[in-house]
Image 1: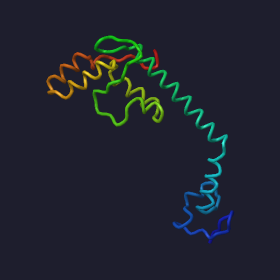
Image 2 (image 1 turned 90 degrees about the horizontal axis):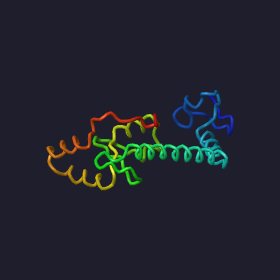
Image 3 (image 1 turned 90 degrees about the vertical axis):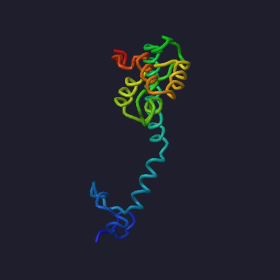
Image 4 (image 1 turned 135 degrees about the vertical axis):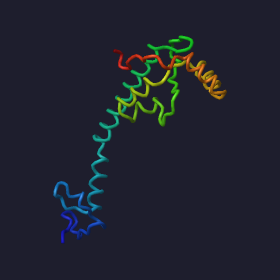
Length: 156
């Protein structure tokens, strides 16, 4: 029978030790493994490096999406200011503003290109009209031009 090399506890498969823990041939129990992980994650340098890189990446991605919205402008009225939104005419689980911080950039770009850029007023009008019949919804989608080829998000 094996014992933990840190605390000397007998290793029982399924109770305090799993074969997947032994990737590096280190026979340590579940408690010692979790304690090591907590200690490692609590180091200020590691925590700060993770936070800074994630924050910088999110800020950069948000700037790219904002530049794309300003470049494209409102699909209905042509407004190109700062008050622009991405309207998703299709069902989606997560909006683009949430995707920039936690999803793969390829997924975020794909979702942003599927959306239609609208200003706040046109976006409110669209949602008001979406509550109407399916015929008015089809006219609205035709007016907005959802089937147009979108420009690339990365500026090219």
